[in-house]
Length: 208
Image (cartoon, rainbow, N blue to C red; front, side, top):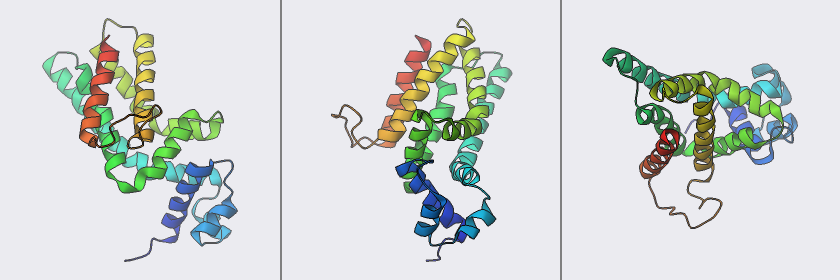
């Protein structure tokens, strides 16, 4: 089996260490040592630790965002064609299904899921801002379509409920298969069953 190239090896090592120890507590020297490369290689390929973090996010989020945007735009086009607002469930599935499916069916995303959790919970803004900057376009489109699907609700109300929904999905991404915070969770459920449960839960919350 061919060994990953230097750039890929650096990104994979950085993803693991950023997830386990945090961005600020992980030095470039630690990354280069574990990746088996020298510091010059990091500077050549990335230029800075922040740029390396961006590369970690982009490896997963660029293909994921492409899928989510295409599905959301498809729902928007269908709603315009029919002359009716989109349905809440249809809009939400454009976001929940590809997100959970891609990140769970790919066995190499475990550390990335941990990093996403850090991005949303770490009080430091560096990681959070880099992450949110890469998903803001998708979230704005998602919010716009949910507002169309819920015309009787204010944008502020829909936005707040969407934040609740994202919290539920983030928790699912991080703890799925680990029993959750409270324990007693059925770890044997397939990702398709989890997607159905989560989507139904969020839909009822958004429509309530």
